Image (cartoon, rainbow, N blue to C red; front, top):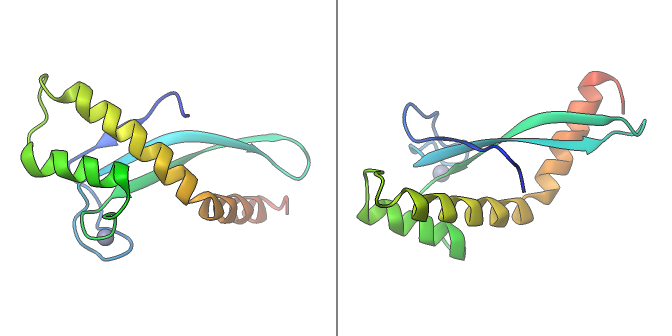
Amino acid sequence: MPQEIEIAVADLPDCRRCTAAPLLTARFPYSWQNARDEKVTGFREVMLCQQCDRGTPAADALLALFAVDSQLDLANVETFATLVRTWLEETQERTVDLQLLDMEWDQWQRGNL
Ligand SMILES: [Zn+2]
């Protein structure tokens, strides 16, 4: 799992899938080996959309927290952090192919593919 995750809950861009306003975005560093066996690092951003992200256990748990707690405070911040991490793990499992596509696109842009 990534070490540093930046969470944003305000001033978010529209959901790329349905154009609704997402509930949060998470941005984290990730890295991979390119075709020359060099380590390439970058950032990846995922968003939680209440229209598009229903139906998986971690996303539903996080959406449920937003439904009852629209304000984050010290009482729920640990629950929130745990749910976000679980959701990111779930998201990464689900978007492996997308990550691969991003990687290949990035390599292509750098002339490494
Ligand atoms: Zn959406």
